[in-house]
Image (cartoon, rainbow, N blue to C red; front, top):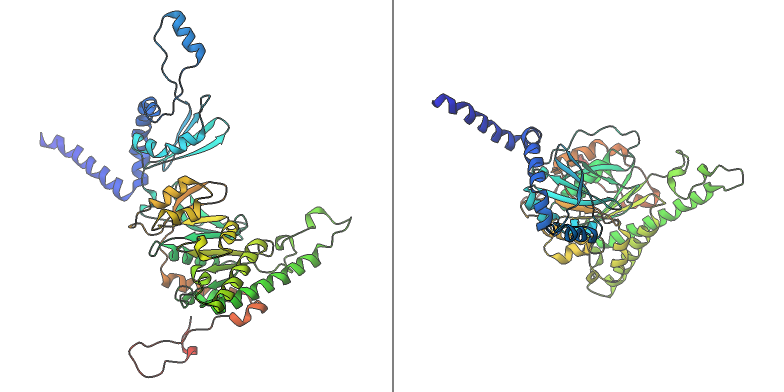
Length: 455
Protein backbone atom coordinates (compact mmCIF):
# COMPACT_ATOMS: atom_id res chain seq x y z
CA UNK A 1 0.00 0.00 0.00
CA UNK A 2 2.84 2.35 0.81
CA UNK A 3 4.31 1.80 -2.65
CA UNK A 4 1.14 3.28 -4.17
CA UNK A 5 1.85 6.56 -2.40
CA UNK A 6 5.51 6.75 -3.39
CA UNK A 7 4.95 7.59 -7.06
CA UNK A 8 2.46 10.47 -6.48
CA UNK A 9 4.71 11.87 -3.77
CA UNK A 10 7.74 11.79 -6.05
CA UNK A 11 5.76 13.43 -8.86
CA UNK A 12 4.50 16.14 -6.49
CA UNK A 13 8.01 16.89 -5.24
CA UNK A 14 9.31 16.98 -8.81
CA UNK A 15 6.56 19.41 -9.82
CA UNK A 16 7.30 21.71 -6.86
CA UNK A 17 11.03 21.67 -7.61
CA UNK A 18 10.31 22.39 -11.28
CA UNK A 19 8.07 25.30 -10.28
CA UNK A 20 10.81 26.83 -8.16
CA UNK A 21 13.86 26.26 -10.34
CA UNK A 22 12.35 26.36 -13.84
CA UNK A 23 9.13 28.39 -13.66
CA UNK A 24 8.88 28.65 -17.45
CA UNK A 25 8.97 24.88 -17.88
CA UNK A 26 6.42 24.44 -15.09
CA UNK A 27 4.14 27.01 -16.68
CA UNK A 28 4.25 25.38 -20.12
CA UNK A 29 3.79 21.89 -18.70
CA UNK A 30 1.09 22.46 -16.08
CA UNK A 31 0.32 26.07 -15.24
CA UNK A 32 -0.99 27.22 -18.60
CA UNK A 33 -3.65 24.49 -18.70
CA UNK A 34 -4.91 25.16 -15.17
CA UNK A 35 -4.92 28.93 -15.76
CA UNK A 36 -6.85 28.69 -19.05
CA UNK A 37 -9.50 26.48 -17.44
CA UNK A 38 -9.73 28.82 -14.45
CA UNK A 39 -10.16 31.90 -16.67
CA UNK A 40 -12.87 30.29 -18.80
CA UNK A 41 -14.84 29.00 -15.80
CA UNK A 42 -14.68 32.25 -13.84
CA UNK A 43 -15.01 34.59 -16.79
CA UNK A 44 -18.68 35.61 -16.54
CA UNK A 45 -18.72 35.96 -12.76
CA UNK A 46 -15.46 37.94 -12.76
CA UNK A 47 -16.68 40.34 -15.45
CA UNK A 48 -19.86 40.92 -13.47
CA UNK A 49 -18.01 41.40 -10.16
CA UNK A 50 -15.57 43.88 -11.73
CA UNK A 51 -18.35 45.93 -13.33
CA UNK A 52 -17.31 45.05 -16.86
CA UNK A 53 -20.75 44.00 -18.08
CA UNK A 54 -23.54 45.95 -19.76
CA UNK A 55 -27.27 45.68 -19.12
CA UNK A 56 -29.39 43.87 -21.72
CA UNK A 57 -30.54 45.91 -24.67
CA UNK A 58 -34.06 47.29 -24.93
CA UNK A 59 -35.20 44.86 -27.58
CA UNK A 60 -34.13 41.91 -25.39
CA UNK A 61 -36.03 43.36 -22.45
CA UNK A 62 -39.08 43.94 -24.63
CA UNK A 63 -38.87 40.41 -26.01
CA UNK A 64 -38.63 38.97 -22.49
CA UNK A 65 -41.70 40.90 -21.35
CA UNK A 66 -43.62 39.88 -24.46
CA UNK A 67 -42.76 36.20 -23.97
CA UNK A 68 -43.26 36.39 -20.21
CA UNK A 69 -39.72 35.22 -19.56
CA UNK A 70 -37.20 36.20 -16.86
CA UNK A 71 -35.24 39.39 -17.36
CA UNK A 72 -32.05 38.65 -19.34
CA UNK A 73 -28.73 38.83 -17.49
CA UNK A 74 -26.12 41.49 -18.09
CA UNK A 75 -23.78 40.67 -20.96
CA UNK A 76 -20.05 40.26 -20.69
CA UNK A 77 -17.58 41.19 -23.47
CA UNK A 78 -17.33 38.47 -26.09
CA UNK A 79 -14.16 36.37 -26.09
CA UNK A 80 -12.50 36.53 -29.48
CA UNK A 81 -9.40 34.52 -28.65
CA UNK A 82 -7.56 32.94 -25.72
CA UNK A 83 -3.92 32.28 -26.62
CA UNK A 84 -1.33 30.70 -24.32
CA UNK A 85 2.23 32.03 -24.31
CA UNK A 86 5.49 31.04 -22.63
CA UNK A 87 4.77 33.52 -19.83
CA UNK A 88 1.00 33.67 -19.51
CA UNK A 89 -2.23 34.07 -21.46
CA UNK A 90 -3.48 36.59 -23.99
CA UNK A 91 -7.23 37.19 -23.87
CA UNK A 92 -8.73 39.26 -26.67
CA UNK A 93 -12.22 40.68 -26.06
CA UNK A 94 -14.87 42.36 -28.18
CA UNK A 95 -16.42 45.24 -26.25
CA UNK A 96 -20.14 45.67 -25.94
CA UNK A 97 -21.81 48.98 -26.85
CA UNK A 98 -21.20 51.49 -24.08
CA UNK A 99 -17.97 49.95 -22.80
CA UNK A 100 -14.63 51.72 -22.74
CA UNK A 101 -11.08 50.37 -22.89
CA UNK A 102 -10.20 52.50 -19.86
CA UNK A 103 -12.59 50.42 -17.72
CA UNK A 104 -10.46 47.32 -18.29
CA UNK A 105 -7.25 49.21 -17.60
CA UNK A 106 -8.67 50.50 -14.31
CA UNK A 107 -9.81 46.99 -13.33
CA UNK A 108 -6.53 45.24 -14.15
CA UNK A 109 -5.60 44.76 -10.48
CA UNK A 110 -8.99 43.23 -9.67
CA UNK A 111 -8.75 40.94 -12.69
CA UNK A 112 -5.33 39.80 -11.52
CA UNK A 113 -6.69 38.71 -8.15
CA UNK A 114 -9.86 37.21 -9.59
CA UNK A 115 -8.05 35.04 -12.13
CA UNK A 116 -5.24 34.19 -9.64
CA UNK A 117 -2.49 35.33 -12.01
CA UNK A 118 0.65 37.34 -11.39
CA UNK A 119 -0.19 40.37 -13.50
CA UNK A 120 -2.77 41.67 -15.98
CA UNK A 121 -2.15 44.50 -18.43
CA UNK A 122 -4.84 45.87 -20.74
CA UNK A 123 -4.31 47.59 -24.06
CA UNK A 124 -6.59 48.65 -26.87
CA UNK A 125 -5.95 46.84 -30.16
CA UNK A 126 -8.42 48.78 -32.25
CA UNK A 127 -11.79 50.39 -31.82
CA UNK A 128 -13.98 47.97 -29.89
CA UNK A 129 -11.28 45.35 -29.24
CA UNK A 130 -9.24 45.06 -26.01
CA UNK A 131 -6.42 42.65 -25.26
CA UNK A 132 -5.63 41.42 -21.74
CA UNK A 133 -2.04 40.19 -21.44
CA UNK A 134 -1.91 38.03 -18.32
CA UNK A 135 1.38 36.89 -16.79
CA UNK A 136 1.33 33.57 -15.01
CA UNK A 137 4.44 33.89 -12.82
CA UNK A 138 7.02 36.42 -11.64
CA UNK A 139 9.40 36.71 -14.59
CA UNK A 140 11.42 39.52 -13.03
CA UNK A 141 12.31 37.59 -9.88
CA UNK A 142 15.51 36.27 -11.49
CA UNK A 143 16.52 38.22 -14.57
CA UNK A 144 18.14 36.11 -17.25
CA UNK A 145 18.70 38.09 -20.41
CA UNK A 146 18.34 35.92 -23.52
CA UNK A 147 21.36 35.61 -25.82
CA UNK A 148 21.76 38.73 -27.93
CA UNK A 149 20.58 38.12 -31.47
CA UNK A 150 22.69 39.70 -34.21
CA UNK A 151 20.95 42.71 -35.71
CA UNK A 152 21.93 43.90 -39.19
CA UNK A 153 21.56 47.54 -38.22
CA UNK A 154 21.71 47.73 -34.43
CA UNK A 155 22.87 51.35 -34.47
CA UNK A 156 21.87 52.94 -31.19
CA UNK A 157 19.43 50.22 -30.12
CA UNK A 158 20.74 48.78 -26.87
CA UNK A 159 19.18 45.94 -24.80
CA UNK A 160 19.13 47.08 -21.18
CA UNK A 161 16.46 45.13 -19.28
CA UNK A 162 13.89 42.36 -19.30
CA UNK A 163 10.18 43.14 -19.48
CA UNK A 164 7.54 41.32 -17.47
CA UNK A 165 6.29 39.62 -20.65
CA UNK A 166 9.79 38.14 -21.12
CA UNK A 167 10.60 40.43 -24.02
CA UNK A 168 13.84 42.40 -24.05
CA UNK A 169 13.51 46.09 -23.30
CA UNK A 170 15.67 48.15 -25.65
CA UNK A 171 16.85 51.72 -25.35
CA UNK A 172 16.55 52.95 -28.93
CA UNK A 173 18.01 56.43 -29.31
CA UNK A 174 16.84 56.75 -32.90
CA UNK A 175 13.20 56.30 -31.82
CA UNK A 176 13.40 58.02 -28.41
CA UNK A 177 16.23 60.58 -28.53
CA UNK A 178 16.14 61.73 -24.89
CA UNK A 179 15.10 60.01 -21.67
CA UNK A 180 14.60 60.63 -17.96
CA UNK A 181 15.53 58.10 -15.28
CA UNK A 182 14.33 58.75 -11.72
CA UNK A 183 14.69 56.63 -8.61
CA UNK A 184 15.54 56.70 -4.93
CA UNK A 185 18.86 55.71 -3.40
CA UNK A 186 19.65 51.98 -3.85
CA UNK A 187 16.77 51.54 -6.26
CA UNK A 188 18.98 50.27 -9.08
CA UNK A 189 19.16 53.51 -11.03
CA UNK A 190 22.96 53.54 -11.19
CA UNK A 191 23.10 49.86 -12.23
CA UNK A 192 20.65 50.62 -15.05
CA UNK A 193 22.92 53.44 -16.20
CA UNK A 194 25.95 51.15 -15.93
CA UNK A 195 24.20 48.53 -18.07
CA UNK A 196 23.43 51.20 -20.62
CA UNK A 197 27.08 52.25 -20.79
CA UNK A 198 28.11 48.61 -21.23
CA UNK A 199 25.69 48.27 -24.14
CA UNK A 200 26.92 51.46 -25.79
CA UNK A 201 30.62 50.67 -25.30
CA UNK A 202 30.75 48.41 -28.34
CA UNK A 203 28.87 50.85 -30.57
CA UNK A 204 30.18 53.64 -32.74
CA UNK A 205 29.17 56.38 -30.32
CA UNK A 206 30.82 59.08 -28.23
CA UNK A 207 30.01 58.90 -24.53
CA UNK A 208 29.94 62.15 -22.56
CA UNK A 209 29.36 62.05 -18.82
CA UNK A 210 28.46 64.50 -16.06
CA UNK A 211 28.86 62.96 -12.61
CA UNK A 212 28.80 65.57 -9.86
CA UNK A 213 29.40 62.95 -7.15
CA UNK A 214 33.08 63.60 -7.76
CA UNK A 215 32.96 61.08 -10.57
CA UNK A 216 32.53 57.99 -8.39
CA UNK A 217 29.92 56.45 -10.71
CA UNK A 218 31.36 57.18 -14.16
CA UNK A 219 35.10 57.72 -13.64
CA UNK A 220 35.82 53.96 -13.38
CA UNK A 221 34.41 53.70 -16.92
CA UNK A 222 36.41 56.69 -18.16
CA UNK A 223 38.42 54.68 -20.70
CA UNK A 224 35.38 54.70 -22.97
CA UNK A 225 34.32 58.32 -22.37
CA UNK A 226 35.20 61.11 -24.77
CA UNK A 227 34.51 63.75 -22.10
CA UNK A 228 33.73 63.66 -18.41
CA UNK A 229 32.93 66.38 -15.84
CA UNK A 230 32.83 65.64 -12.11
CA UNK A 231 31.68 68.99 -10.67
CA UNK A 232 29.15 71.70 -11.64
CA UNK A 233 31.78 74.18 -12.85
CA UNK A 234 33.27 71.70 -15.30
CA UNK A 235 29.77 70.60 -16.28
CA UNK A 236 28.86 74.17 -17.29
CA UNK A 237 31.94 74.42 -19.48
CA UNK A 238 31.39 70.96 -20.96
CA UNK A 239 27.77 71.72 -21.88
CA UNK A 240 28.87 74.97 -23.54
CA UNK A 241 31.44 73.03 -25.60
CA UNK A 242 28.79 70.49 -26.54
CA UNK A 243 26.47 73.25 -27.75
CA UNK A 244 29.35 74.64 -29.85
CA UNK A 245 29.91 71.16 -31.32
CA UNK A 246 26.20 70.94 -32.13
CA UNK A 247 26.46 74.21 -34.05
CA UNK A 248 29.36 72.83 -36.10
CA UNK A 249 27.37 69.69 -36.95
CA UNK A 250 24.45 71.80 -38.15
CA UNK A 251 26.81 73.77 -40.38
CA UNK A 252 27.94 70.49 -41.90
CA UNK A 253 24.35 69.35 -42.49
CA UNK A 254 23.47 72.68 -44.07
CA UNK A 255 26.52 72.53 -46.37
CA UNK A 256 25.71 68.98 -47.50
CA UNK A 257 22.01 69.49 -48.27
CA UNK A 258 22.68 70.95 -51.74
CA UNK A 259 19.00 71.03 -52.61
CA UNK A 260 18.46 71.33 -56.34
CA UNK A 261 15.83 70.32 -58.85
CA UNK A 262 17.74 67.24 -59.97
CA UNK A 263 18.62 65.97 -56.49
CA UNK A 264 16.68 62.79 -55.53
CA UNK A 265 14.39 63.11 -52.52
CA UNK A 266 16.26 60.32 -50.70
CA UNK A 267 19.47 62.38 -50.69
CA UNK A 268 17.93 65.46 -49.07
CA UNK A 269 18.64 65.42 -45.36
CA UNK A 270 17.98 67.49 -42.26
CA UNK A 271 19.95 65.30 -39.81
CA UNK A 272 23.20 63.35 -39.66
CA UNK A 273 21.69 59.96 -40.51
CA UNK A 274 21.23 60.68 -44.23
CA UNK A 275 24.70 62.15 -44.67
CA UNK A 276 27.30 60.07 -46.56
CA UNK A 277 29.09 57.64 -44.26
CA UNK A 278 32.46 59.37 -44.66
CA UNK A 279 30.95 62.71 -43.60
CA UNK A 280 28.58 61.55 -40.88
CA UNK A 281 29.62 62.74 -37.40
CA UNK A 282 29.69 60.21 -34.63
CA UNK A 283 26.51 60.28 -32.48
CA UNK A 284 26.90 61.52 -28.91
CA UNK A 285 25.15 60.21 -25.79
CA UNK A 286 25.26 62.58 -22.80
CA UNK A 287 24.73 60.88 -19.43
CA UNK A 288 23.87 63.12 -16.47
CA UNK A 289 24.16 61.14 -13.25
CA UNK A 290 22.42 63.51 -10.80
CA UNK A 291 20.58 66.46 -12.33
CA UNK A 292 19.74 68.05 -8.96
CA UNK A 293 23.42 68.80 -8.34
CA UNK A 294 23.42 70.87 -11.53
CA UNK A 295 20.25 72.76 -10.65
CA UNK A 296 20.93 73.68 -7.01
CA UNK A 297 22.35 77.11 -6.18
CA UNK A 298 23.35 78.68 -2.86
CA UNK A 299 24.45 82.15 -3.98
CA UNK A 300 24.31 84.58 -6.91
CA UNK A 301 27.36 83.12 -8.65
CA UNK A 302 25.93 79.61 -8.47
CA UNK A 303 22.57 80.88 -9.74
CA UNK A 304 24.23 82.29 -12.87
CA UNK A 305 26.04 78.99 -13.40
CA UNK A 306 22.81 77.07 -12.84
CA UNK A 307 20.90 79.16 -15.39
CA UNK A 308 23.65 78.57 -17.93
CA UNK A 309 23.60 74.80 -17.31
CA UNK A 310 19.83 74.45 -17.55
CA UNK A 311 19.67 76.65 -20.65
CA UNK A 312 22.27 74.54 -22.43
CA UNK A 313 20.55 71.31 -21.40
CA UNK A 314 17.23 72.58 -22.77
CA UNK A 315 18.96 73.69 -25.96
CA UNK A 316 20.55 70.26 -26.42
CA UNK A 317 17.23 68.54 -25.74
CA UNK A 318 15.37 70.70 -28.25
CA UNK A 319 17.95 70.75 -31.04
CA UNK A 320 20.26 67.83 -30.41
CA UNK A 321 18.37 64.99 -32.11
CA UNK A 322 19.16 66.03 -35.68
CA UNK A 323 22.82 66.55 -34.72
CA UNK A 324 22.98 63.05 -33.22
CA UNK A 325 23.14 64.26 -29.60
CA UNK A 326 21.05 62.28 -27.12
CA UNK A 327 20.39 62.92 -23.43
CA UNK A 328 20.08 60.37 -20.63
CA UNK A 329 19.22 62.38 -17.49
CA UNK A 330 19.15 60.66 -14.08
CA UNK A 331 18.02 61.99 -10.72
CA UNK A 332 16.15 61.21 -7.52
CA UNK A 333 13.64 64.00 -8.13
CA UNK A 334 12.90 66.10 -11.16
CA UNK A 335 10.36 68.70 -10.13
CA UNK A 336 9.76 72.41 -10.44
CA UNK A 337 11.46 73.01 -7.07
CA UNK A 338 14.78 72.66 -8.92
CA UNK A 339 14.15 76.03 -10.49
CA UNK A 340 13.30 77.79 -13.71
CA UNK A 341 13.60 75.76 -16.89
CA UNK A 342 13.51 72.31 -15.30
CA UNK A 343 9.94 71.54 -16.35
CA UNK A 344 10.77 72.70 -19.88
CA UNK A 345 13.67 70.25 -19.89
CA UNK A 346 11.50 67.44 -18.56
CA UNK A 347 8.97 68.02 -21.34
CA UNK A 348 11.70 67.29 -23.91
CA UNK A 349 12.62 63.94 -22.35
CA UNK A 350 10.33 61.53 -24.19
CA UNK A 351 11.47 58.27 -22.63
CA UNK A 352 10.63 57.83 -18.95
CA UNK A 353 11.97 55.23 -16.52
CA UNK A 354 11.06 55.24 -12.83
CA UNK A 355 12.74 52.94 -10.33
CA UNK A 356 11.53 52.68 -6.74
CA UNK A 357 10.61 56.13 -5.44
CA UNK A 358 10.08 57.37 -1.90
CA UNK A 359 6.81 59.19 -2.56
CA UNK A 360 4.05 59.45 -5.13
CA UNK A 361 5.11 62.97 -6.07
CA UNK A 362 8.38 61.67 -7.49
CA UNK A 363 6.50 59.15 -9.61
CA UNK A 364 4.18 61.91 -10.80
CA UNK A 365 7.21 63.85 -12.01
CA UNK A 366 7.95 60.98 -14.41
CA UNK A 367 4.50 59.73 -15.40
CA UNK A 368 1.94 62.23 -14.14
CA UNK A 369 1.52 63.76 -17.59
CA UNK A 370 1.60 60.36 -19.33
CA UNK A 371 -0.28 57.61 -17.47
CA UNK A 372 -1.83 57.48 -13.98
CA UNK A 373 -1.52 53.67 -14.04
CA UNK A 374 2.25 53.96 -14.50
CA UNK A 375 2.42 56.24 -11.44
CA UNK A 376 0.64 53.62 -9.34
CA UNK A 377 2.91 50.87 -10.67
CA UNK A 378 6.05 52.88 -9.82
CA UNK A 379 4.86 53.53 -6.26
CA UNK A 380 4.22 49.81 -5.71
CA UNK A 381 7.80 48.69 -6.49
CA UNK A 382 9.17 46.73 -3.53
CA UNK A 383 12.35 47.97 -1.85
CA UNK A 384 13.64 44.39 -1.86
CA UNK A 385 13.61 44.30 -5.67
CA UNK A 386 16.40 46.68 -6.77
CA UNK A 387 16.58 47.19 -10.50
CA UNK A 388 12.83 46.88 -10.99
CA UNK A 389 11.41 49.89 -12.80
CA UNK A 390 8.50 51.14 -14.87
CA UNK A 391 9.39 52.25 -18.38
CA UNK A 392 7.12 54.35 -20.56
CA UNK A 393 7.04 57.10 -23.14
CA UNK A 394 4.85 60.04 -24.11
CA UNK A 395 2.41 57.79 -25.98
CA UNK A 396 1.06 56.51 -22.66
CA UNK A 397 2.30 52.94 -23.00
CA UNK A 398 4.32 51.47 -20.13
CA UNK A 399 5.66 48.18 -18.83
CA UNK A 400 7.54 46.81 -15.82
CA UNK A 401 11.18 46.03 -16.45
CA UNK A 402 14.21 44.88 -14.48
CA UNK A 403 17.80 45.34 -15.53
CA UNK A 404 20.35 42.57 -14.91
CA UNK A 405 22.86 43.22 -12.16
CA UNK A 406 25.95 44.49 -13.97
CA UNK A 407 28.89 44.60 -11.59
CA UNK A 408 31.30 47.50 -11.67
CA UNK A 409 34.17 45.13 -12.47
CA UNK A 410 32.35 43.76 -15.52
CA UNK A 411 31.53 47.28 -16.71
CA UNK A 412 35.14 48.43 -16.26
CA UNK A 413 36.48 45.41 -18.15
CA UNK A 414 34.11 45.99 -21.08
CA UNK A 415 34.86 49.71 -21.27
CA UNK A 416 38.60 49.00 -21.17
CA UNK A 417 38.24 46.39 -23.90
CA UNK A 418 36.49 48.91 -26.17
CA UNK A 419 38.63 51.92 -25.26
CA UNK A 420 39.98 52.03 -28.82
CA UNK A 421 36.49 52.95 -30.02
CA UNK A 422 36.50 56.24 -28.10
CA UNK A 423 36.24 58.99 -30.73
CA UNK A 424 38.04 62.33 -30.62
CA UNK A 425 35.92 65.50 -30.75
CA UNK A 426 37.96 68.72 -30.87
CA UNK A 427 35.48 70.80 -28.87
CA UNK A 428 35.50 68.20 -26.09
CA UNK A 429 39.24 67.54 -26.02
CA UNK A 430 39.87 69.62 -22.84
CA UNK A 431 37.44 67.37 -20.96
CA UNK A 432 38.99 64.03 -21.98
CA UNK A 433 39.28 62.04 -18.73
CA UNK A 434 42.71 61.09 -17.48
CA UNK A 435 43.57 57.98 -15.44
CA UNK A 436 43.07 58.93 -11.78
CA UNK A 437 45.98 58.61 -9.36
CA UNK A 438 45.86 55.67 -6.99
CA UNK A 439 44.88 56.82 -3.51
CA UNK A 440 46.40 54.77 -0.68
CA UNK A 441 44.20 55.28 2.36
CA UNK A 442 46.04 55.29 5.70
CA UNK A 443 49.54 55.69 4.25
CA UNK A 444 51.59 58.89 4.41
CA UNK A 445 53.91 58.39 1.43
CA UNK A 446 52.83 59.99 -1.89
CA UNK A 447 50.66 58.00 -4.33
CA UNK A 448 52.05 56.23 -7.35
CA UNK A 449 52.17 58.12 -10.64
CA UNK A 450 48.97 58.11 -12.68
CA UNK A 451 50.69 56.33 -15.55
CA UNK A 452 51.27 53.30 -13.34
CA UNK A 453 47.59 52.56 -13.27
CA UNK A 454 46.05 50.95 -16.31
CA UNK A 455 42.42 51.13 -17.16
